[in-house]
Amino acid sequence: MKMKKINKNSFNSWKEYYFEYQLKLAEQYYIPLLKKLNIDLKHKKIVDIGCGNGGFISAFAKYSTELYGIEIKEFDWPTEIRNKVVFLTGDLTEMTEYKATIVGPNVKLIILRDVIEHIPDNEKLFFLKKIKIFGGSDTTFLITFPPFYSPFGLHQQVFCNSILRYVPYLSILPKSILKFILSIFKENKDTLEKLLEIKNCKMTIRTFIKLYRELGLKKIKSDFFTVRPSHTLRYGFKIRKSYLGNIPVLRELFVTGVSFVLKVKNKS
Image (cartoon, rainbow, N blue to C red; front, side, top):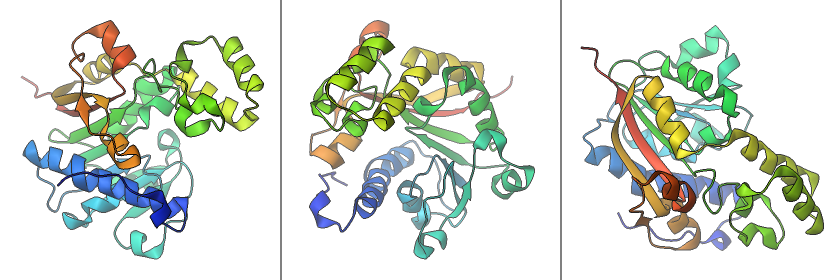
């Protein structure tokens, strides 16, 4: 299925647009990727952690009726979506036994799309261990994120309101200089807090590889992008994979996004 830009002006609200964006991202890129890897989705238990307004997980309704979305805050999911997906609200690391029992165990596909870069650096391993509990020996993990040192690894294109949203590599600036620049361009306190959150979380490719190996996961497939699939839907740019994926320093700087498909290592 060919991907093309989604026109924001065709929707009545940002909420409607973003739902469609997530839905199409799953339908047109990630579900075909999983199917190409012979990962069976039919009648399987699937959970999307950090599911937002539910667009991504809703795309799997064509394959399964056991769909779950976990989000730290309430998104006022409409009834037609709740009929397809069971949504749970709260911090995954503090989730009560009751809520955890609703979802797991034996989840066959665990999705973590552009979430791990929002988890504090010293909590990432604990967070991923909590996620792994939902799965089993045959669970697949789909994890994506934009590397911290990449041109827009600070998410400035999303959070900033001034021309700074077009300025790359803000992530490499010391906090004091970043604060000063934001004040010059009259960015508000909320923007500063969001950028500092990403800076404190600092998700690099190197760190993620170390984390998944420590968790006992093995790589089925990894993709490194110069132009991410999300960029096609948002801006109309053609997807471009990067050839720098195996070059440690350069990939941190020039890869704008990564996706990993992982599984639990078989015990010998």
